[in-house]
Image 1 (cartoon, rainbow over the protein chains, first blue to last red):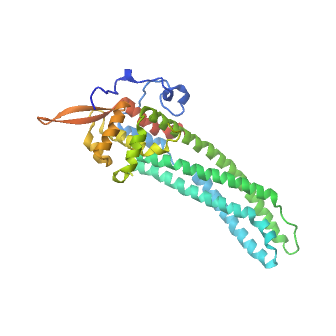
Image 2: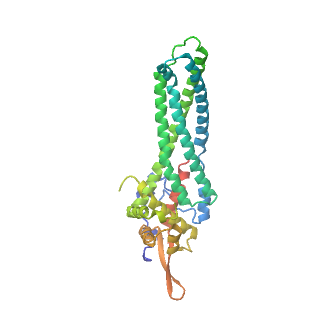
Image 3: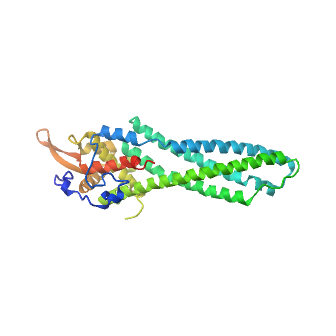
Length: 249
Length: 98
């Protein structure tokens, strides 16, 4: 290593490479090509990070409401099915009643999983705010969770499609005597669930767009750094071999 | 180069951590090489490889300074470019806010 490698010399910077071009201005700061660095002081960077790294409240609120309502519906459906069992209804017919609610139960499970991940995401933001973790570690802990969040979003969207398929496939069976009241409640719950899933599908589609954009942005930055550090794969291999000794896990 | 950047993430975390330490230390003070290795729990041979890469990418500079009467030590400083790359990640949240 020698002093000749002086990266402080602005004339050495290749300012017109793809990462700094206006095409990437959504992700890379200073699209003009100039090295516009607002903060050189660590405390300033930390403060600006605390301002921009906001907790993700939307999934927490909407997902929470969805999980609560669908759990409530599931409990009522469970009680209804218990009563239906007294009428000696064949299992095949009974299955037609409950398919959509089984799917709802699976969607609810994924929603709760998503809530747990978002809870961890928000906890990470909190750790920076209280100086318990470095910015680099926090950032990567968050980046590593993007794929998991995307997986839950895609799973929920697929399950929502399955729900709509079952909804169209099995309509309310003819009303035998003695079941009118039960079927009325059932029909109401069925419609309510449809409305709930429909709204939730729109919300999750928006989340898919948002998180996918986030993932692409991270990849774009990482690729740019990979271009500048061509031997990164060697470093990654070495790091993996000696990862037990690292103090940054 | 593979389209997936995930497999390089362990190295990228260390790079970001090195840059963060240097920013913390301040542009004028810098940090002694051995302190960086110690703080991150890096073996010297691996730490050297990281610093070599960061120098060639012009993220950092290393200066040899006198330490005591006869001894010298190598101090590491972050460059504008290194600071800029670190801030890419820090800006990510605000850029993507919807």
